[in-house]
Length: 229
Image 1 (cartoon, one colour):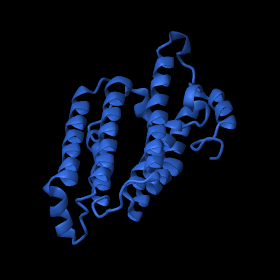
Image 2 (cartoon, helix red, strand yellow):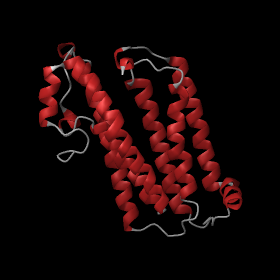
Image 3 (cartoon, one colour):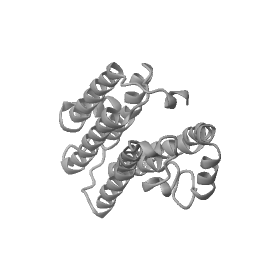
């Protein structure tokens, strides 16, 4: 967590991350709409519901929005130093979404229905909580009067790591949109990663940085899921 205290533009690392992400986005298009889906389905001996274009468009739209959000957050909002190993690990993690969900939706022949509109709403809410929370926090931090203070406003008044909760929601939306039971493993893994590793580790860092101010914040604000956990 010492990286959170080190500021740097990290331009070369950001360029590498975006180039890899763009390649992954192209691969998802190749899988969903070109010969990639049929080729992979043939190799895996699984069905390929090519006629269900609407569902694939939905997944690819999720991909584009996620790519755009990540780009904005990394270029505009991320101020900390990015180590070179992270320039590989971050795209690798997002490959699970861009490529993984594109593969999981291949055999799904079910037309879009009400549940998919729920997935779209969930994706929007999760994206707003994640990116919107970071935008509001960034604006707050730019005020010199707030230097050295802990941010507890905006969406972060509902949970200490509301941005992580937003991540979980939009990943659940991806999983629902695939209509593939195996896709449920992805948000389950993400929840466990945040709840039992990343959030507690960040809590420890924030407690060391803000002391009693963070203790007061933590005593009245749930860690991850608003009002629950």
